[in-house]
Image 1 (cartoon, rainbow, N blue to C red):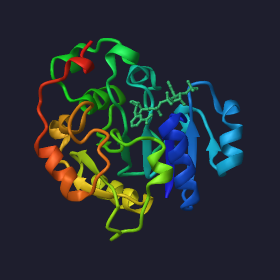
Image 2: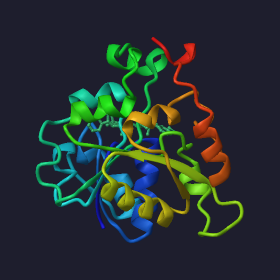
Image 3: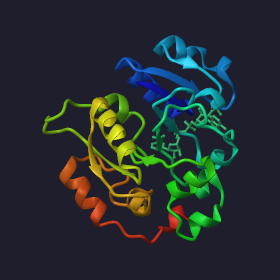
Length: 219
Ligand SMILES: NC(=O)c1ccc[n+]([C@@H]2O[C@H](COP(=O)([O-])OP(=O)(O)OC[C@H]3O[C@@H](n4cnc5c(N)ncnc54)[C@H](OP(=O)(O)O)[C@@H]3O)[C@@H](O)[C@H]2O)c1
C-alpha cells in the first residue's frame, strides 16, 4: 500500500521501519523538512517529504505528532489522498509534560475527536497505548499464544477494516473498541493504556475503563 506518515519520532520512525520492511511504499514527514530525514530514508527506503505532501496518493496516512502540533498541520492535508483513505491517529493528550491545556478535551471531548476536528478528516485511533519500541520487539504471527492485542476505535467501518488488516500484518491482534465517542476507553491512564496482553484481557480492560480523567492527565 501507499502509506504517508506524518511525524518521524518514536512512533513514526518505528512505523516507517516496520511498514517499509513489509514492502509498503512509505512517505514520511517531520516538522523540519525532508532534508532532515535522509538517515531514516537511507535506513528504510522510505521517501522523505513535507507534511503537506505526505498524504498524496496514500491509502493510509498515519498522524503521529504531539497533540499540541496538530492544529499547526497544513490545511487540506488529505486533498490528494486516495479515495477512502484511512487516517490513523496515535495521539495522546499530555497536558502537564507537553501539550498544555486544551479546554475541549478537559471538558470531556475524546482526544481523537478533537484531532479529527483540526485535521478535517475522520480518524482510526490505534497504537496510542503501545510503547514505540514494542512495534519493533513484540510482533508475533497470527495465532501465536503470546500475541499482543491493541484496541482500534473509529467511526468509518471500511477504514477501520483496512487499519485492522494492517495492524495484523504488523504482528498484533486487534479488538474493535467502537467509535470515536467510545475512544476515551483507550486514552492515557485507562486500564488498557500501555497494557501488554492478548485479546481477552484487552477486551476486559476496555470494559473496565472509567470516563473520569485522572489528575495526572489534567492540565
Ligand atoms: N512514544 C511512544 O511510545 C508513544 C506511544 C504511543 C503513542 N504515542 C503518541 O503518539 C504521538 C507521537 O509520539 P512520539 O513519541 O512518536 O513523538 P516524538 O518522538 O516527539 O516525535 C514527534 C514527531 O512529530 C513531528 N512533528 C511535530 N510537529 C510536526 C508538524 N507540524 N508537521 C510534521 N511533523 C511534525 C516531529 O518532527 P521534528 O522532530 O522535525 O520536530 C517528530 O518527528 C504523541 O501524541 C504520543 O503521545 C507515543
